[in-house]
Length: 354
Image (cartoon, rainbow, N blue to C red; front, top):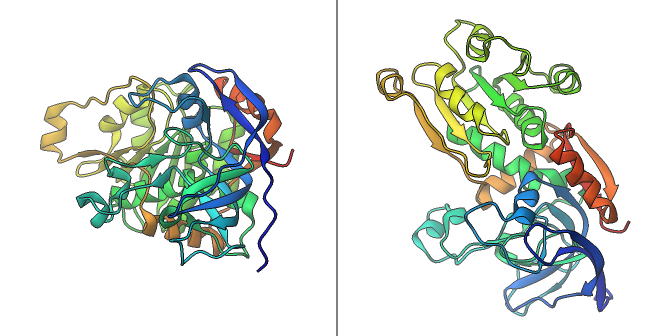
């Protein structure tokens, strides 16, 4: 394939200081290092993490100035001289884990997200709210060319993350999983991955639009509205066949309260898996019940390269249809405003050409 023409400048959304504002302007196109590729980003999903990056309210300092975004799908247009297994023209995804050392104990055992030297797209290195993005070749997501780039972009963070969380939960086909925050970007994908893995789903969220989407479109067997429920714990348990609660709970909510309730309604010997990261939140559980009912409480943090290829393959086979709306990248602030207000059902994807 002939070498594509790469411009000197590109459009990007950038923040200069913690707290914003985001500024839509032209910046230089970077050149890939020896082990890197340059991806012409066509679409990028928008994640709640991107808000945390702007506000700097997590205990990891962000790069400044910063181009956010970590769900970018596009085409490889340049590669470093050490890269031999990625071709110009390949479709690729730039995800949260932009790179890792590949040599430490975690990297060697398939836990590269835990690498002490991990590079995080849109957080410690520039991310995908730009038209051309750098990534370590070893860590790009390999996207088959028959997969639409706009539709797959939410899978690159939200999809991989919830798929990994479901694997970590230990829930088996036929069992029940409760998904807290089911109407959002992660939750709507978690519901579909759970169904594709043979699990029954109880969705927990609030609002008529989310209830309809989750039960009618995504196939959850029950929806509990935490804002109108008189007793969330009892309602969740009552939605399970034997009334003892779900086998696993996936916490993808963006506030703290649901994290405290989950340990109460998960069934004995069940697992509570924390995935969402509300700023400053704590996870508490009564010790007596945790011990005498053998409950497991754990965290799950994105996925490794194998999890990535598996999550994309579920999507390629038509088992996952990420609900999304497309908006021009120049209008990114509108998406963040809707996020602040909790008014997003599914996921927003930005088109970098607009």
